[in-house]
Image (cartoon, rainbow, N blue to C red; front, side, top):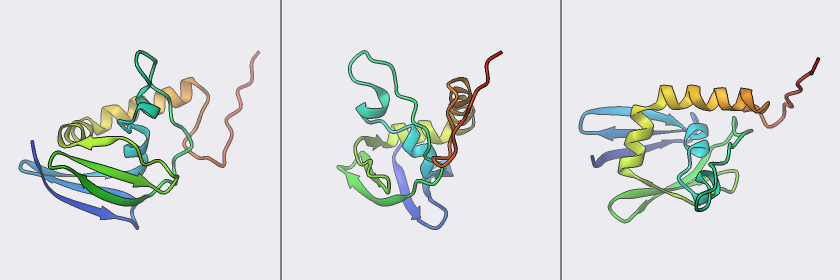
Length: 124
């Protein structure tokens, strides 16, 4: 489904996406940790990388990539990966489940969202 309107809200660190059947707001942190780039999704058959410490990430720039996708430049320097309309729609519709899954993965690996905070596990 084609994206009809895109609005970058730098103050709220989010993208507002308008599809024919609804409007969605996706936080920059969510878009960053679910980047479609090989750096995040993995190269070849390698497992996806768990990206942590992106709680404060923002979006510097959004630009069209042809007539089918967006290229998003994040303020942490990440600027690879093409977000197709289809992938953005998938991220929007599955936001709650994806976000909960991400938070569970962080907890299970002893990582966190805040780059200034360290998670320490005590054994025994």
